[in-house]
Length: 189
Image (cartoon, rainbow, N blue to C red):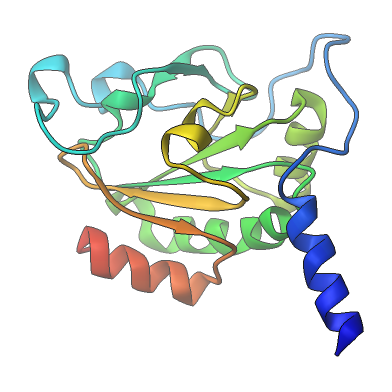
């Protein structure tokens, strides 16, 4: 019992601060993931809701591809925004689960990873190790995590086609749990 409690405490602690190395070094090659959504695939300024809870007004660089995503513009298509980090064991455990749901739902739901408080090289390695194909952005300064009040990772934000945050879930999800949340909050079965 004590060993299980200790293992859980260590896993949770692992998801509150980075332990991996990395940082700036040689330029990294492009990686085999979908490119970030183009501005035409996001909400135009006139389409963005005037009221309600939205993601913060920050532009984050795409991980492994050129460009950036204006996070406040996420919408137009129901979107799963998953905050993760390479140093977070539960994050890495759920990545294949998210990939499975991403493939199953196709273009009915957009998936966007947000690599948080991390270094680019280990983040790209985590994406490749998990065989994730959906796009991710790089949030070294934890701007999205602070905006949704995430004190640990992973964290999943469900954003409706109207650009409003419909739900925030803190903690790892299985594919079945994620599908249930998507159906409940985004209306996509």
